Length: 326
Image (cartoon, rainbow, N blue to C red; front, side):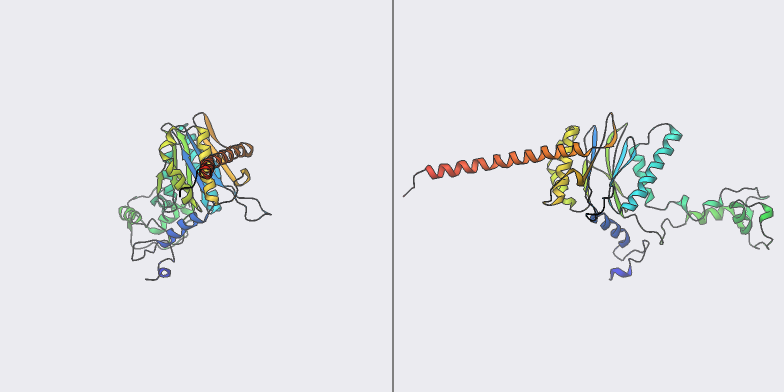
């Protein structure tokens, strides 16, 4: 079985039941810069690595504010992330305008997951329903009149053309629309993964939206390049996250980001940290504050290293003072 026979478009299944185009989009997330999210009962923290393509260019934004109570961090194709963040903002604005209340985080995540699919309401026939003039018999009409009136043309604008001899029943038309395939071969999946952090009436939430359309809620999660090192670090502290304060979440988020750098020095210029919590709208921290936290982390690491070396030195001194056993 050759993979290139089944990866030409997103609607072609392999004999093993796989969609290779979707898997390629998920691989694009793994190639992006690392992004980390942690949540407690009151706060959610997002942290990302912002690396410039070269010394002569600036870095791309990886954290976007959606609303006062919601923000996202992305990994993968930044252009796709910008498009999806704009879509999420529009959803929040529409919900606030209609219901005069903030959009719940879980509902926004469902909208984002549905964006990866093609719902029936966006099928090629959405304009068949809003008829602009009544028919004498609404159950029987010519297909020519159907398309012309659905597009808003008046009767005089319809060109004189001999109608079809076959008339369509409206019930059969609905049945044909209901079986429209919900995927399109000429579209590609979004090559970006999103960590959605938010706070609503039910508490703090952290979701991950996958390019496949799946979404999961996490206590802590990491995506992007070398994210497994950050996951391993967070798994060791998983049980204590619920009781963490805001500052402790920020420190652990920077610790996790540092694990993904693999020996590179962590500075405030290559990372972004954002916070949302009770009484604290979503915002990104200043670089000065981030650098202060990084400096405190390095001081603690130096103290811990010195404490580990002290017992070894004491053992060496005691062994030198002890007489030899003959």
